[in-house]
Image 1: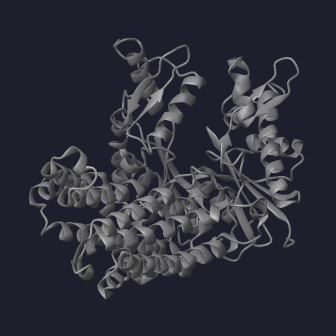
Image 2: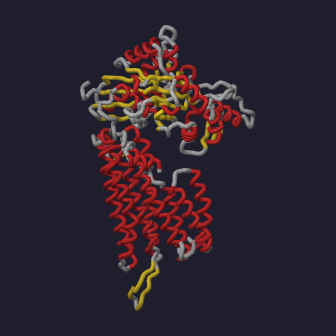
Image 3: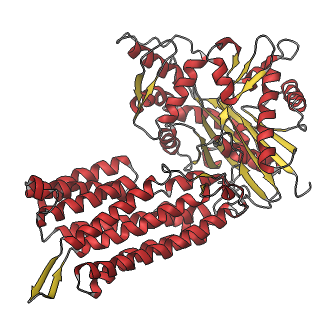
Length: 629
């Protein structure tokens, strides 16, 4: 294989298609209109027979539902070209579209092709898939199953683990497969995890939505799903990852209805409760024991991932590696067929993630943090208690804990800016910058470490200049708060280029600071200081006691939100800190409460650095200890 050959791995799933391309030691997820996945469905014009793929196919299907194939690969498996030429033409169109996108991004044609199928295919089905690829002008594909591709994901040590269990959360039921990694990923067993007499996940959610749309009518769980309803439910399941509830607009309805996480749990949990008996059957079919399962992979693209992870660990399986994006399966397929042109799994140092123009929306986190820090510093200076004798300043009292918080937030803003660097650009030249993601990460986080310390120093010196009284403690408090943040940024700069390329997307999203929690803490500290100095807004509305209590309660809630990502723990801590802070706040205690939040913010940065270490070196004894902790 020539070093400059373009190798393409395509995951053609029931709902989404994703791909990974590699050339000359560089690998990246193929992007479609700025996204790393596109709809798998294809609309076939009934008059001309010409296909429309991706978003164009969805738009065309809104006027002609019958011409749309939502899952062309499944149709190809059971339909020959002589019986119905549409599935073969649809698969060819999807593969051609993906290959064209990869070729445009790489500047050369595809030389080798890997295609992932949902389950093992027989010779006739594989031949139909090969013919579809050749019809698209592509080479004969290497064909692997989605379970094998997931088991070969970069998050697993393939030389150490043998038997791997893959759990996939499909649109209807969870499915588990047992594979022998040492035997060319032979699938030893496959079982559908299904509760008796219980409809599938999508069917249950659709029935609940129809019941609400029908003004409280009893849900009809027997009604079949059409593809527009199924697509709407799939979007809702994905949206519930980041929101507790989401609207669903059913076909034929003019008003959306709302489904929430409780509805998704109601639909999925009965099947997940059957995981243990299904696992027992799978192990018996594979002729192995539960202790032989050395690794578990969970493939879940929606909000069921948390419940499925819990079910797998409760069943006595190893903590799963979670694949939350279709392109991660494509990575595994590429490794399995050896088309990645690197001796080891590609990392950030050898990968170049797609970059988009920096927008105002992208800068929201940085802007919120910068404004919060500046306002807090300004209030600290303007509300200082300055003592003078004959117009000569002889002493100054100001809330140094607020100064430390302002400095810590300024340093965090620098880290937030660094998190944007690998995926955004300021000038059009940046879109074609050949620098790898690892290089951009190292450069941006080192710059963030330096900028954070510089800003903290300026804040400390600026406070002294602002009040007309230079005191070393101002600089000491500001820099002391920023030093741990800068150190964590430096650690991330050194280690992040080693992160596997397949994990970069999820890692980057978790490196974004909790901007609104930090802003709430700054607002809380501002309100308390306002209450005790009778400045805006207390000087305008009065009620200093109530203002101080509200500010302290905000500080307590922000502490809980910053210290942990776990919703249950956040709620438990809030129930203690919010009323507790509101009750104990006064002039003598607010400094301690603010310092506690600064400690929580430093803890977030330490956790981010630890997470980076675990992603970059998952097999190192120290990072294993960190992961267990």
